[in-house]
Length: 439
Image 1 (cartoon, helix red, strand yellow):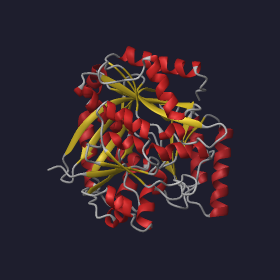
Image 2 (cartoon, rainbow, N blue to C red; image 1 turned 90 degrees about the horizontal axis):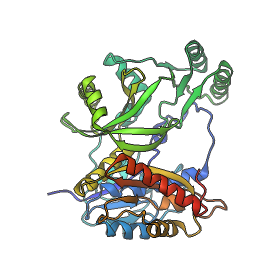
Image 3 (cartoon, one colour; image 1 turned 135 degrees about the horizontal axis):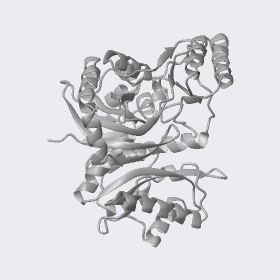
Image 4 (tube, rainbow, N blue to C red; image 1 turned 180 degrees about the vertical axis):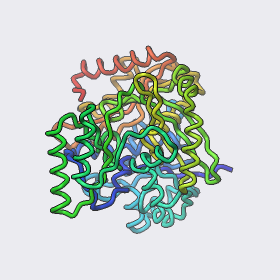
């Protein structure tokens, strides 16, 4: 009998795995973006069966819930109803709040009959939160999860498996400048935070002057704050295709390959997930990719990890395979895409997962959905083509701002790649015509 499960998510898990005294690369704080990311927990509905519970910081948007019900996607909901500014996600994440506060009677009621907690990523306090509500949590040790998610671990694994590895680890500002200087003679260089996520913590360096400024910033942190510098320095590879494979590693060491997706990035940040076509699948098979994946899974299990893994890989210009770009030992956007694929496969169609950064319309998500419906772009499970919205709170996350920025996650559903691309372009045109700026 299947265990009834409560799902919850913190999408920028990596920052909770960081050492508190770690040096930081230069970045701009964006409060509106932070609110959007904290509202992404609603995307976890894709994992829920009808009797499962989705736990979110804010109540699941009722209009999105009504739409999903109309296309026969159903689940139970429970919310902490946290004020995003009173309890910012960057100060206390979902599970930390559950663990640190008194048991909430309405959550006990909402979680009635549920026996298992499955988080998007294992964070500090997940185990205490599960214990407080009497939920089973099958997960590796926290320090194991933090270790295998580090880009340093990914680099070490390349060496262990004798895979291509042009990167070095810099453990001081001086080491970073020395390594970067040597690599710049051949071309641009990437500096990577070991626990950066979705493009954050990746800096492209194309000149000695920029490298020197970054090194000086890190040296100041070392001298004034006692910060520990720990970064990956590697040449910018000439990639042809980004792709990822989703695995589930069992506690006994066996594993299942769930899906392979082509990943479209905007710079170094995630933009879209597309199901890998037959040509890509055959190319990576012929280059021994799946044998390498098996070895990686074995190493992860040997290092005491089990659970979901999204392995980021590349094909380089000229056809060379670069198997380990990053290891995400957690759920991922590509795993969310896989779950949506399972739903769409039953209907005999396909979808691309993407998002639009857009100004929030005056009527919020309700207006946005009405525009789609009026234009004939809205997906339903009779026509089997259209735009399927899969978030709403992300669009309204900054409703109190004078110029509210939002993000709308969607699935473009159609049988051909050309039709899916056409739908996204039609949506962009519709929003512009309605006076919504796209960012």
